[in-house]
Amino acid sequence: MAGDNTSLGDLAGRYAAALLDLADERKALDEVAGDLQQLRSLIAESADLRRLLTSPIYSRAQQSKAVAAILDKAGLGELTRRFVLVVASNSRLFALSAMIEGYLTELARRRGEITAEVTSARNLSDGQQAALLNALRSTVGDKVQLDLTVDPALIGGLIVKVGSRMVDSSLRSKLQRLQLAMKGVG
Image 1: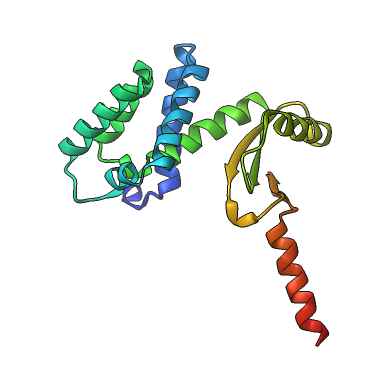
Image 2 (image 1 turned 60 degrees about the horizontal axis):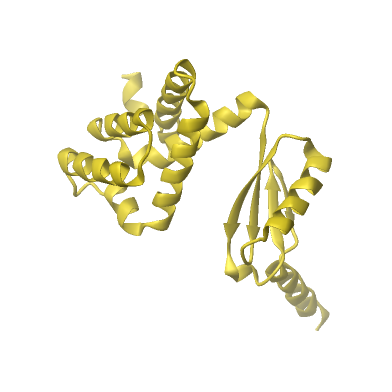
């Protein structure tokens, strides 16, 4: 059967599209997007939560009960809560992160927004974020959103990825290039 050979992206895309349609009908696109961003942060911060979502050890009932408690504690909206519980009851929690990304990506695409993935060695101040956002807007257009992550291994500088373009001005990369250049000298 054709449905048996479904990839994770197709599965997550279908669920994300369904949630997007429901949120659009209820005029709750931004509310759901905020909930999903909060949920994405919770997943990123907790190895235990990631384990709960992906481990086949937990039964459907155990996962549903645990996820319901987490959603209640996080204070997510009713539509997002019901969506995640349906995902849990269908034993699809392993794809929840991909569903979240699918929803946020499609919402941004519909709005004509571009997301710039920015990795820095330390948290950027509000002023630094504003300056970076202004520089990106002058380059790629007005509807730019920043997706900030911190990677102390960069030592300093930034890595900025917009679409298929990437600018790596991190100190780590500069040191690696210098090391390669010095190896070739000897």
